[in-house]
Image (cartoon, rainbow, N blue to C red; front, side, top):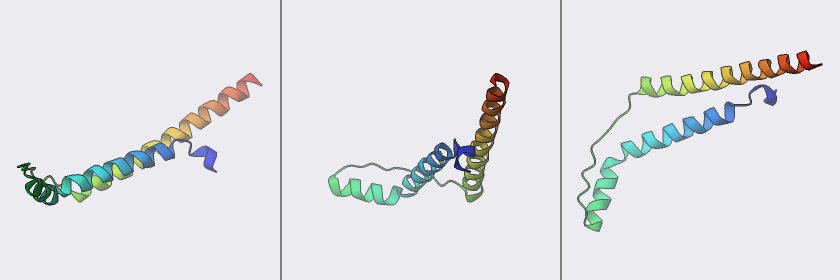
Length: 84
């Protein structure tokens, strides 16, 4: 079954990167206070990604990676059948 979802690991990697960036964007208060302790005036604005946008990105990446895996696998199976 794992051979059918060949590109799923790349999709999960993209999702993890997205969630990590979203978490970093939400930590602006902590980064600003840490900058103040060090002597820097960072003043990073608060950027919040709405929940529906996050769910849409996660769902879209999962679906696209599964569909890409399915179509690429079926394409290669057809190509190997033609060669035999």
